[in-house]
Length: 255
Image (cartoon, rainbow, N blue to C red; front, side, top):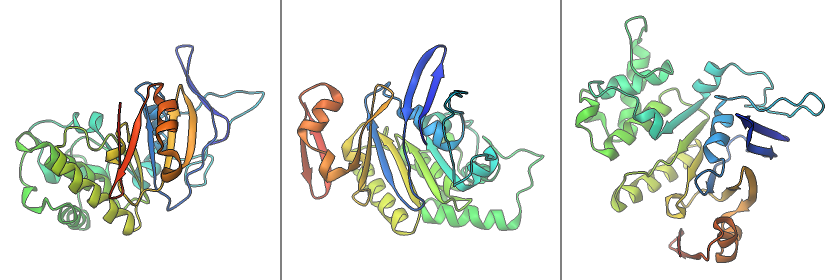
C-alpha cells in the first residue's frame, strides 16, 4: 500500500497508509478499538477498495497485482474472524464448514460440487487442527476452541499463502490460548504467513517478530516487537500509562 486511505460517510477511517508485507512474512496488528485495524484487514483481503484520489492515485497491490479477482485472493488468503464464525448456521456440520472454504461460502449448497480431492483436503485440514473426530458434529455442539479450530481448518483447506486472523483468541481460556499460540508457531514454521489482529500482546505467537501499531487510522509504529514493546511506546499508543513485561517470549501489558 502506498498513500492508501479509506473514507466512509465522509469520515476518514484510514489515513494515507504506507505498508508492505512481504511474501512469506508474518506480522501482528495491534491498537485500540476504532484505530482502523479491521478496516486495514479488509483492505488486505481485498474486501474493500481504497479511496480514489484522481490527482494523486494511491497504490494497492495484493500478491503483486494491481488488479485482482476477489475470488482468487480468497483462495490464496485464508480468513478467520468472529464475524465470519458467527454467520454459520447451528446445524452446519464441521466437514461442511471446512469444505465451504473452497467456495468462499457459509455452507456447502446443492449447486456446489465437492470432489474427492476436496474431501481429502478437508480431512487433512481437520487432522492438522486435531478435529478429525468432529467432522460429523454440528456447529451448535462445539466449544469455542473446537469451532475456532474448524474455522482455521476452513481457512487452510485451499493451502493459502497467507492466513489473516481477526482477534483469533477471543473467548478462549488461558490454556486454550496457549495451545493456539503454539499451533500458530507450527503453521509459520510450515511456511504459512500469518497476519494477526489483536488488542492483547499475549495473543502474539513467539515466532511473529514484526508488529504494526494502529492509532487514529494511521500507522503509529511498525517494527520489531522487542523494540516496540516497551512501556513508553505502548503508553503512547494507548494514551495511558502501560507497563510491559516479557515472560518466556510472550509479552504482557497492564495499567
